Image 1 (tube, helix red, strand yellow):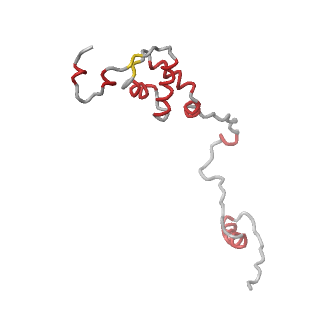
Image 2: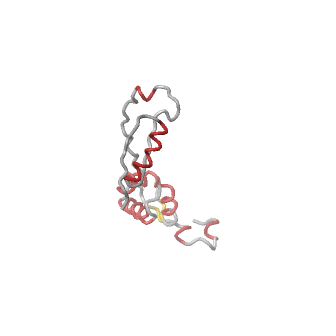
Image 3: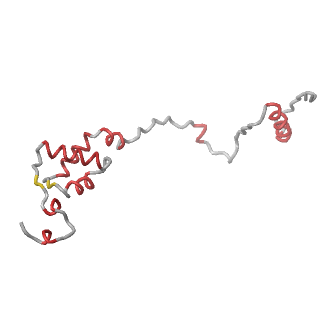
Length: 138
């Protein structure tokens, strides 16, 4: 066949005259599988564009969808994460309170220093009076 593509100096002979392959042939499936792996498991459209540079397969997208659905790495990457089952919210947490009505403090210092750091806070809040004996330092 003639045409404008024959006169193009930039296109190779394989691009202007691609090999015509049957849709249901085993060779078509092997070529689609090969290009899918070579192109690092890309999608059906980008794989089809690269195959059509050398081969012409009618309904190539449907073949590629079948190849991609059987591809284990693609199947693992397209898996949806499992949604955890959430428990009901406790009624105590649904009551209206003021901000910071109940809060906690986490201290990352040695225990001796933590006790003496907490004593002024306890006295300040005046929850109760604690008597702690301080050991003499050596």
